[in-house]
Amino acid sequence: MGDVLVVAEHEENRIHPITFELLGKANELSKKLNGKVRAVILGRGVRDIANELVYYGADTVHVYDNESLRFFNVLLYKENIVSLIKKFSLDLVLIGATNKGRSLAPRIAASLKTGLTADCIDIFVEKGKIIQVRPAFTGNIIAHIYTKTRPVLTTIRYRVMKPLKKDEKRKGEIIVEDLKFSNSKGLKVLGKIRDKEVRISDADIIVSFGRGVKRRDDIKMIKELADLLGGVVGASRPVVDEGWISKDHQIGFSGNTVRPRLYMAFGISGSPQHLAGMKDSEIVIAVNIDSSAPIFRYSDYCIVADLYHVIPNLIRRLKKIGGSNG
Image 1 (cartoon, rainbow, N blue to C red):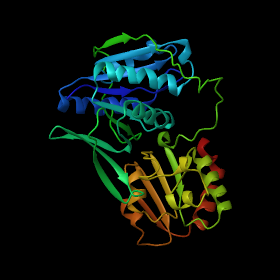
Image 2 (cartoon, rainbow, N blue to C red):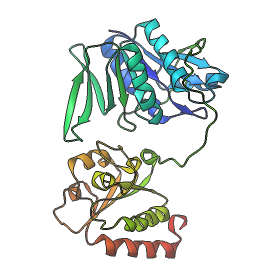
Image 3 (spheres, one colour):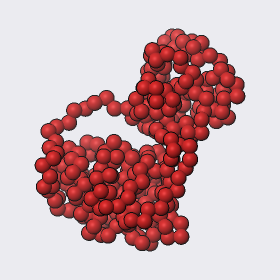
Image 4 (cartoon, rainbow, N blue to C red):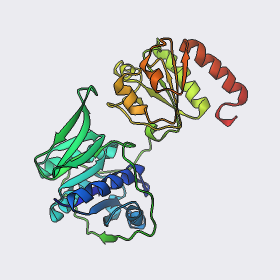
């Protein structure tokens, strides 16, 4: 077999934590594949942060540092990463299942005429074969996928892998690569507009709601409670499918995997698809009128009550003590 490549992601020269998770998994896999861990990072000024990738598990880091990479240009990224993969005949490429990764990965796969398994929750080696694990059929089954073509290209969800402990004494090779300029005239990045982004996977406090919320307008009280607690709003799949809230807020196999310090579930019964996305939360508080709701089996505090009684009372009490500032 061969080396494992991790495509590093960063924002304003701060490496995204998913990259460290991918490096941790790459270390595990490289031992089974008798290879080493390579990482690639593209951007402007990224040479200064390349050592971070070594500290978290990369043996070799390929750096593309150029003014042309000031903004994320998916075609320029694709062309240079494809060239790197071909140069070293890499067998396995790991990319984060983020907005950038989901845009980049299929373009790399198409260029290499190989398969892509998206949104994986695990990957392992069995009898020399690379097996990718992902939810399928809207999260009702877990599929184990073997890709015959090479390289194996995989996007992996955030917060499902464990990073290695940072080791600043770890040694690795930093290689500064020459940027290949794309001949494509199909894309020109004019600038960047910062939009309000939901980073639910990073949240320490999540207030989630499900079918127990009767009206779309009632989401306002969920949002008010989340704001008072200094948290963000989460949701189960049915209310996302109804169009009540964007998919960015969805928790579960077909949404986001989260590990907050506090997870509050209002009117969520607890389907296996939803539980898989939040079961590793430190503290779970569930409120449901059904005492037999499956989510209670995974909760630290179970409240059999109407959320329309509980939430307004919580809001009143939090306002008395000053909300998240109290």
